[in-house]
Amino acid sequence: MSNLDTFRTETRAWLEDNCPASMRTPMPEEESPWGGRNAQWPNPDSKVWLDRMAGRGWTAPMWPEEYGGGGLTSQENLVLQDELRRIHARPALMSFGVWMLGPALLEFASEEQKHEHLPKIIRGEIRWCQGYSEPGAGSDLAGLQTRAEDKGDYYLVNGQKVWTSYADHADWIFCLVRTDTSKKHDGISFLLIDMDNPGVEARPIRLISGASPFCETFITDVKVPKGNLVGELNKGWTIAKQLLQHERTMISAMGTVGGAGSSGGLEETAKTYFGEQDGHIAIASMREEVARQKMDARAFGLSLRRSAEEAKAGSGPGAASSMFKYYGTELNKRRYELLMKLLGSQGLGWEGEGFTGGELNTTRQWLRSRANSIEGGTSEVQLNVIAKRVLGLPD
Image (cartoon, rainbow, N blue to C red; front, side, top):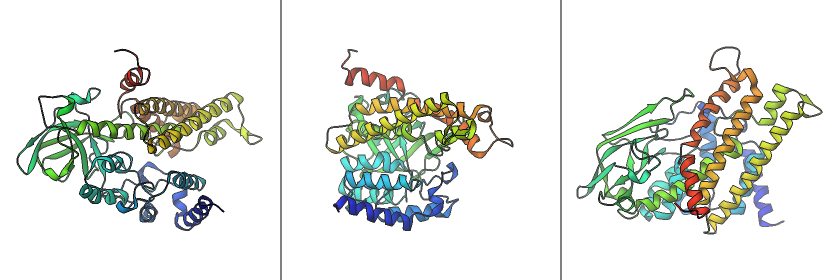
C-alpha cells in the first residue's frame, strides 16, 4: 500500500469518527460557520466540527504546520477533499482569512505577524473582512483615497470603504490605504485594522435578495500601530494584486458547486419537479440541460485544480485568475438560472406558505448570484485584463 493509500485509509477513518451526522446534510445559510469573536452557533455541531478540523489544521490543510496548518502535500489535500465530498461534509469554516488574507500573509508578512494572525484564522477565532473598494475607487481600485498619515509610532487612518462583505460581523479588516498622495499605485500600503478601534463603523447595505452581506465602512481618526503594516510602506499594491488573485479564484469556485447556502443538486431538483423515469430525469430536454451544466462545471473544476497545482509550482495563476473569475461567475449565474427554470412557478416565492425553505432559498440565491459579476472585480475589468495580459491585445 502506498503512502497516499495509507493516508486515504486513515483520513476516511478519522472523518467517519469525527464528522457529526448533522454536518453531512445540506447547510442552511444561517448555519454557515464564519467563526469570529461573536460567532453564533445555531447548530452546536458546527462548532464541534470546526474545532476538530482546526485541531488537525485541516481548515487550511496545505498551510505550514508551524502556523497551525495541516502541512499536507497537494496530493494529500486532494485525497482529503475527495473524502470530504464522499461523506457530503459541510465546510468546517468559511473565512476570508483562509481564502484571501492568509495566503497573502504567508507570502508578505513578517514572522511575528504570521504567528500572531495565522493560527487564529485557522481556528476561526477572528473573522476578517476586506477593505478595498471605495465610493470613487471600485473598478479603478488604485484611485482609492482612504489615507494613513504617519504620526510617529502609529498611523492615523481616515476614509470610507464600500461593498465590505460582512463588515458588520467582522473582527478585523485588511485594508488598502494611501500613504503617499503624489503617486498612484506606488503610494498604497496594506494595513491590518482591529474593527473594535474607536472610529470604525460598518453600515449594512440591503440588496435585492433581501440580505445585507455588503456594508459601507467608515474609518474616522483611527490609530493603527505601525506593526500592523504588512510588507513595505507604499508597496501594498503588489500585495493587493496577489490577494485579488486568491479572491477571484475563490469566487470562481462557486461555478463548480454553487455558493454557500445553495439548495440541493441540479439532478435531484430536476427529478423532484419534472419526475423520474428509470432512475433518470423524466424530460429529455431537461436531462440534456442538466448534463451540459454538470459537464461544464466538472471541466471547470478540473481546470481550477490544474491551476492550483501550477500556482504551487510557482507558475500561476497570474492573469489566468481573471479568466477563471469571469467564467466561474457566468457558470454560477447559469446554474441558478437553470435551478429557477426547474422550479417553475415555485421559484416565484419570497416568503410565507406555499413554498418550501429550499425553494425560497434558491430564489434569493439566484438574486444573490447577480452580484458575482461585480464582487472581486467586475466582469468588464476581468475582460480587460484577459484582453491585455492574456491575449496581448493593444489598449
